[in-house]
Amino acid sequence: MHSPPRKRPGVNRSRQEQSPASLFTENATLIIHDPPLMSETSTSQPPLISIVVPVFNEEKGLQELFSRTALALERISPNFEVVCVDDGSRDDSLALLIAQHQKDPRFKAIALSRNFGHQRAVLAGLTYSRGAFIGVMDADLQDPPELFKDFHDKMEEGFDVVYAVRKNRKENRLKRSAYWMFYRLITNIADIRLPVDSGDFCLMKRQVLNEILRIPEQSLFLRGLRFWVGFRQAGFEYERAERFAGTTKYSLKRLLQLAYNGIFSFSDFPIRFLGRLGYSTIVISLMYTAFILSKKLIWGEIIEGFTTLILAIFFFGGVQLVSIRILGEYISRIYDQSRARPLFIVQEAHL
Ligand code: UDP
Ligand code: MG
Image (cartoon, rainbow, N blue to C red; front, top):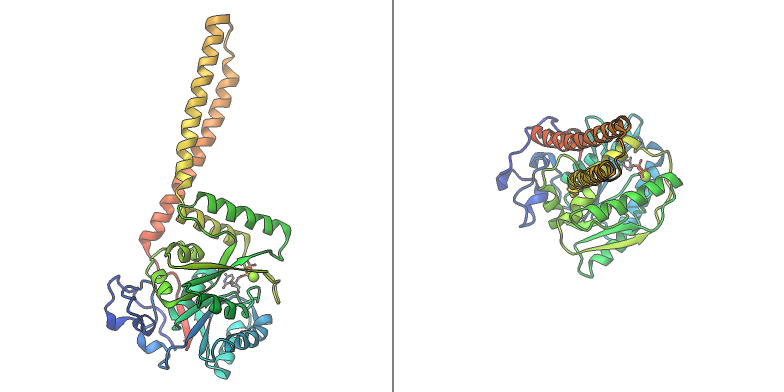
């Protein structure tokens, strides 16, 4: 069992304090995200492959997940671990995860103290995973675990990360078009060329994960960070399956939050957009002034003041409110980052 609240580790952890996961590669000197202490991790040899699975109220599909994942990973190596993170489920998911751990200790169960959201649950699992290869997939079997074998084979061609690219989605049309628009928008405005239609489903090498874990960002957009760290990366096209059981656990609010994190963490487009808006309104108002003045000077027409005034007030009022909103978003993100709360809290860990 795991003692829950621990001091957030300082930036310069000494080598002795690091988790075993970070010790067995040369490259890990600075891991920010609260890795488990030595006493809390399993003492067995690190596995070849770790798969992180965030779980939130998924009791109906878990048995299928366990059997399909075990079977699929056996095809790569029997030396695997599946790090399941219970993200504050209110159903029997945690009990099922613990039962599975007792049956097959290669399945680990980590319980967060409440619901922290998908991205943070994945991050929690990543800090606990000890494999040389680390994968991420959803618990609802929309990401087929059988593909890890293909990812692993592809990595043998010399890649450090293989991420899945969704060829098509089996979700409703509204959600599909929202995703479609978001990925095109972010690809166009982001400072780096984020791959289109790729989620968190991937397999990466330990070195890549260690670099991701060094990033102390509060607003998580893991698929962006995974791309941002660089290394040799390849996309792998697949058809995204339907949920095996249950309904989506991502509320619209959470989905929008994720989209916001992607946009604000990977692009300064919103702030540049304000500048452009400002310049354009100045140009338009100057042109309009010239037009009105010429009407008066050349044709001697009387200027209709009231309507123009009201329109201008409304227009600039709107522009200013939107601008304050965008600035506010940056300020709240700075505030969030400066508070530096831990991104997740582990209540118990069955390792
Ligand atoms: N999930 C989670 N915490 C949450 C919401 C979702 O751990 O607050 C998990 C969920 O159990 C699933 C994965 O994240 O394994 C993806 O969620 P979901 O399938 O509901 O999202 P969708 O595929 O509909 O976008
Ligand atoms: Mg899903």
